[in-house]
Length: 233
Image (cartoon, rainbow, N blue to C red; front, side, top):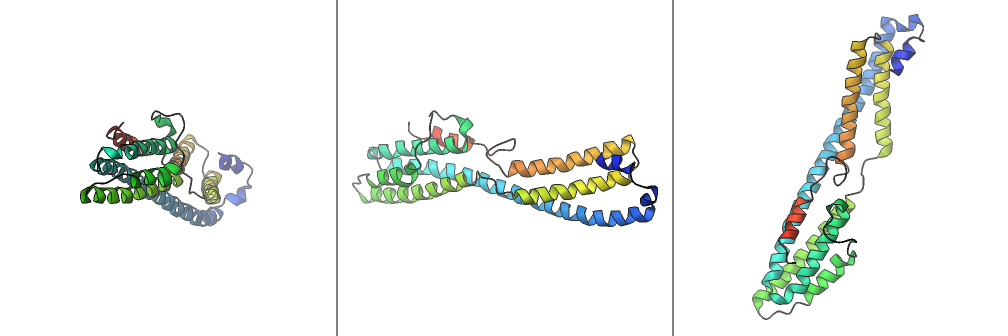
């Protein structure tokens, strides 16, 4: 719309076919760069989204398996299983605050790195089988704790704001040049508005996929909630 308004102020000899061709060549280069960056950002954020979704499913499966391994250690592992459940509730609370898993505040971060590992080490064993289960549980707890920190850190945005601003500037220049030389009729306005809406949708998709635990496109907390439902209460 700004380009259409500027058209009225541009001298007539500046709207010659030669001028249009020169501007079109320059803006084609800008549009190509913007399209490449836009496509790269969409592909990158979508790939990261899929990886984090797989990590959530993997963590849920490991948590469920860890609970079963602890159960194989006998009734003396009850404390460890309770701590594991509380730790999972805390992780869900921190990553998906809207999930409301039955606690007002999350457990301290030390529950993954200190409380749970120490509780597992305190489990008394009476035979080689329980000793093997205890060793396996300790290794699984370490893996799950690392995955929990990884997921928590990935809740932060990784998109460079200056890059996004530059890309928006490129796109704005492209649409401005189109409006500058296009005839001001309803068809042109509607077509350019739809094109701008499509590009804005792509940028919106990038921002949404970059925040996989917030917004419209989110990674579901259902796998973790299913894991919680299978654990001892």
